[in-house]
Length: 186
Image (cartoon, rainbow, N blue to C red; front, top):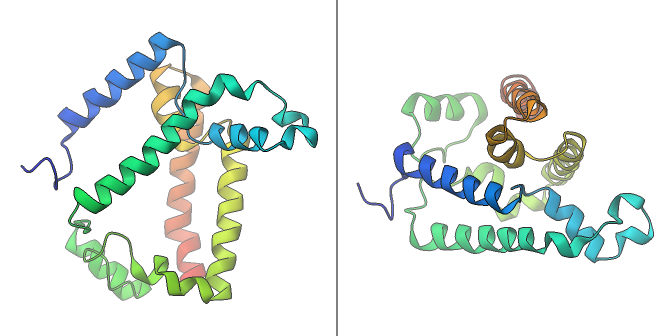
């Protein structure tokens, strides 16, 4: 196994995530990415227009470092620790090709048919991205956090609302990929 280019096995990645959560719990912090949007809006002055953004954002500065680390880590991983291919089951790649016309599955890091820069000039794709982004943002706020916050931090704290949210995320993902995605992109 090459730790630079192969995905880390569960017995390495899992304990590292658990160690991170123990450190955060010990420090009295909760992990989550969507709360950073609220912090950034508050820094930008959104508290003048909405009480939701009126809070002590300086107490959340540590979490902004998580965002910076995720961006830097993602760049390092994609540029220096990846062969830019995601190995998927050949049957799934065939189904994606047959049913949705996604030929790049298994050959590119992300499907270029969906995420290529030139697709942004298509008004339909742009509308899907904007509407989808709104739903993701609204859903994360309505659920009291994002998938990473609930699934990693909330479940490790044994919070029932996080369990309910994670179950909802999975159900929503299944509905999207099996019902809505074929309707939108067929």
